[in-house]
Length: 222
Image (cartoon, rainbow, N blue to C red; front, side, top):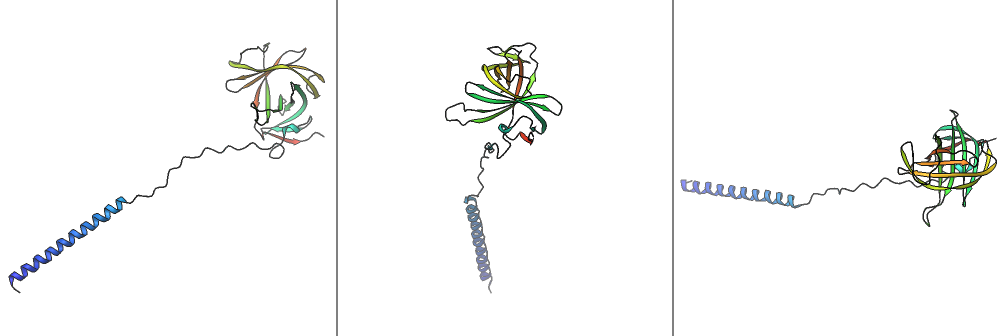
């Protein structure tokens, strides 16, 4: 083979290699471009749902019904045992409720009020309100018709009136009579109530609302 033929052959091979390299480079760029153009599937970020709000249970089926408590029963309030010493059945302007006198294992006396309250607006469902009352020293205080301060907390008037009552068991009250009361609420929701049996002095107590299921009936009165 002549020198000229070898040079031509070499140039041809070099040209082919250059063309092949250019083709491969173009193919890589095309693949890269296509890959970049394809959207990457990312799972959408979902806003967390609010915590579910459990519906109130049904007294008597899902938990003990406080309205069935009787004098002489042994109950537990938040797991603390108490005995029902007596009950005052109270009526005022069509509303009726019961206040149970309790004595716990430390021989501390408390009151438990149970009342079915109507909704605030027309069409609202009635609800069962159960409050545990703890006595507070009044130091001769009388319920004012305006805001009053108890232990540094401002309380504003809610309801006030005179109710009729009937006693059962040991309550420290007559069998029947009239009961003056004045209820107050603080801005933080705390409740305060003054009560007096007509002819007696005022007493006061704070209220602690009890959630459904806070009360269990250990044993019934014989």
